[in-house]
Length: 56
Image (cartoon, rainbow, N blue to C red; front, side, top):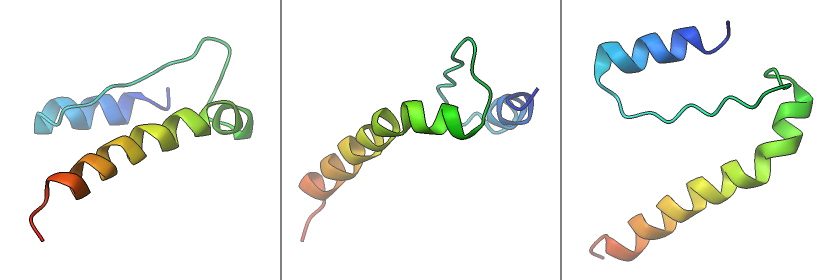
């Protein structure tokens, strides 16, 4: 399974991770096309927070 390596690494390093598995999707183009907007919004939210809290 494609997610087993990611889960194993997260456990070994105690890296915080949220893994979303969508029933009926693999890690193909259709998965990416279906969920890319949500993924980009996730990163934008944290980048925006980082920019607003970092001293200049």
